[in-house]
Length: 239
Image (tube, rainbow, N blue to C red; front, top):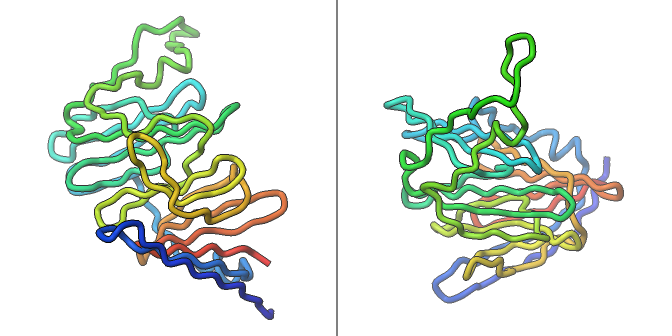
């Protein structure tokens, strides 16, 4: 099948000491691009040499991030609704959560020492059914912010991905009208570049075996994916 390519390149110098980002846009066939990507399949949401991390999400009723110490098996938790990314910079963990309910919402927290989070325990059940304990939805999610530091807490924006380059945290988010590459200053998103001129609400992330972060999206009128590797972002739209 013949393919047609549209190419745009935007080198961006943020400041003299900061990164240059490159962006290009491609029109290609889904079977010849996205379907050929080799994704990493992980048992855990996130894992490093110290922790195995899982998450739960109950939508508008909350969500939880759990860190299990590999050496001690102690599992601690904090409130996070609903986690889409965990990134690590200089031994600190950055947890990005995003929820699309009525109005979009994004929250990003920093966790320096997961061992200082709270050990989550289920409260008293609201009732019993044939001997089984019954809990309300919000009871099964942590409400604790102990051991966390708020980096961003913003409504009307939905973060689609967070990633690290040169030990700095960057984000791809939508304000429902457009999609931007951004950083955070003074607890707010600061746009670096508009990378898509439509809102994105249906999306999923994967990582490839060669270290790329893939952000797939689907709209009624368009489908494609962002391929993120270090300071390079490629938007592939399917023809």
